[in-house]
Length: 266
Length: 48
Image (cartoon, rainbow over all chains, first blue to last red; front, side, top):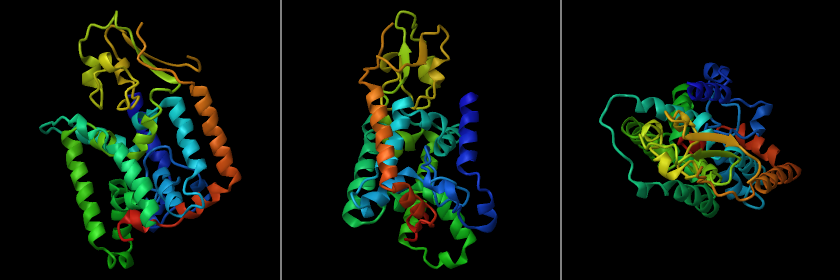
């Protein structure tokens, strides 16, 4: 319940410029120099922060030294504190995935060979391809941009509709594919594609936030695995795996074998 | 108690991240972020 409230409040905070949807434009105020910790398109009419993945691509393609210390430092600081905690508690797209998975439908497991896909997305579409082509190719295909910005601006702005072409069609197909996948699988975008989650997951092993499992207490009832939104077998893998989104649902353990803590030392 | 987490000096990495932010600020990156983020991203919309 706390996690759901946090997800909703985060989505509202990131998108608090509701006026943008009334007038059909985007927020251009002073907060736009700040990076959004969660995945939220900065061209969404209500967005008040900058999308870090969009910014990384921009600097990779056009920056004087092809990277941004400001944004990488920001993501590193969050990652060091909580690993993928933003994925679990402060990402609007994560919330959407959690809600869509509640729809009654046949459910499918995600094959583990797809898990490294998010690193491939990060390296190829956020760094290498934008550097080579000088085009932000992840943004061109990003389903979040389509959902939050593309559809809204096309609906609001008749002048933009004449420019709809192949890329927009591909974006709609990608979005539709992910939305359908979200109904049948737990958090497919987070687990296979999200470049922001890929960056945060690098910090899961070293973050101040720790999840510990007391194997002497664990009765392997499987409740943590069933509760886990990314299907981790917590009593075997713990919370240090790169898949863990630090939602802490696993700590609702009947024998209190799983716990979390913030520790600055080893 | 079995710990699954290997600790690799998170304090140092956090410090590096903060230094990185400060360096980025000194290099005036936030103003470039601002300039980029206040424009409608045509690629995000799917028409650019």
